[in-house]
Length: 441
Image (cartoon, rainbow, N blue to C red):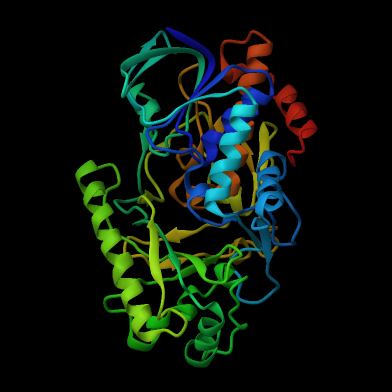
């Protein structure tokens, strides 16, 4: 039987950073993921948001900031987009090529001494007297049982925690955010596309659309080419993510209204979203300058914006977010804004200053929002303990990475202190370690 200090189930955006933080601080770590790579949404072309507050002050450092810079050093395609006081919905986004990040994060994990177990699905757990002792996974090798001192659920669905009977909630009054996918399109002449938008779409005299900053516009509907024909059978928004090559973009616009916890619905969503991707490109090839020679090179897996949400030892509220409430157990900050995508795909991204005119847009992430009713299990990522409204901000890539570094560091500190209950970890020591490793508190 394999025995680890920490087993991270789910090697996505939050989980990969948690594993890296724990390993760099001396823990023996295993990452388990059912997919073929680590990195999650950060590794499929989604821009990384939440690093800068409304005053353009950086609030996320540490490993997330390091990853942006390593990607930039490797290929020159990881960089921040900044936007002024125009129709922005966020102060800045990091544009990171997905294939580069997949390589960088995996390389860093192995350098740190992590073991990575891909193509492996969680099967069962052993819980006794308020503690998780071991998990069983199924892979090509059959069924394996792995024991750990501590565990982190970074599955994005609270799959591990749910197996352990940890309480959770989902949605709000029967409503949940839409499920979407991303797809990569090559062969685009972005110069012609810019001209088209300015001539036919930007009739409201907003700031000129540019490929470098198009992904951070507030009025997403202003930049939809199908605005000319109405939105009857087309998506309600369009995000065009540019990562440094003039013929290469990633589109974020598809949406389906499903229950992401129903595997039959989620499976069909994969087909429906793929169908939408081809429909969108067909429209753009016919009617939008710059897309005549475009083609889809990759359609990424569907992802739910909101799934199970932990009911943890503290539940973050939208008031905590918009008022930047200070927490003594804060493990870092984020500044990704409340970002609600309705079941139909309509996007509403209010600035925190719409709620509080003095809001800086940043917020603390308390460690107690990651802890559960089990003494050695944390939950991170979009399943963090938060209300439905607050989760729409905390699910951003920047905040999820912060949660990961905080959780992984806390486990490493607990191990060094021979503390078997992560809820009782010396949080001041955790914060000291985080601060020494360039996390902004």
